[in-house]
Amino acid sequence: MSIKDPMNPRNAPRKDKSLAFWKVSLLFWELLSFIAVIQGRY
Image 1 (tube, rainbow, N blue to C red):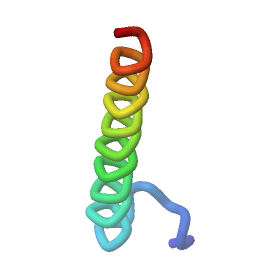
Image 2: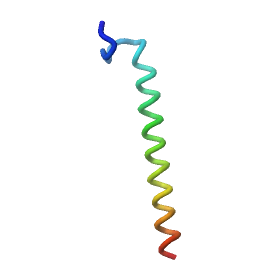
Image 3: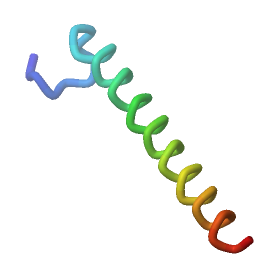
């Protein structure tokens, strides 16, 4: 089995966790930029 094999159970949890973290951080930055736009507008 290669290290990049998605079916490898040893790699799957870490990959899902980092992906979820990336989505949360991206959402957080979108929220921050949205707030910055609102603050700058009013």
